[in-house]
Image 1 (cartoon, one colour):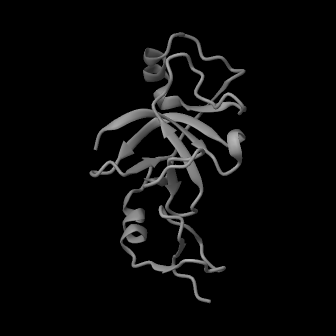
Image 2: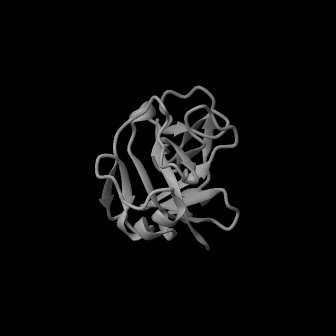
Length: 151
């Protein structure tokens, strides 16, 4: 699997969610992005906010390539972007500046992703109920997805 530097933003809090720039890995199909011990699955019908969702929590994420001008946040959003210390050199090769502005970025260390722990989640049979109040989260088709939940 090839690693690529990407911009990732948690959209569950609108345009002010946590955001990272880091190396990510893709599944063989390219439908899942592995990053910071998360598995983000591509939405079949991306919305305005997110184009991926966390297969464990259902939170929506925006995943995209980095912008050369460093303006990856939505124009109405804000907050520092966490820049993985292992991707700083590669990030500076991609953008039009050569110094990390500490007013916009915070250097962090992202966790390695144990992809094997997601195999069980993705290969577990799921139970769909269109309007279930007890569902864990929505799936790609906006149906409620229930994972190991007893009602």
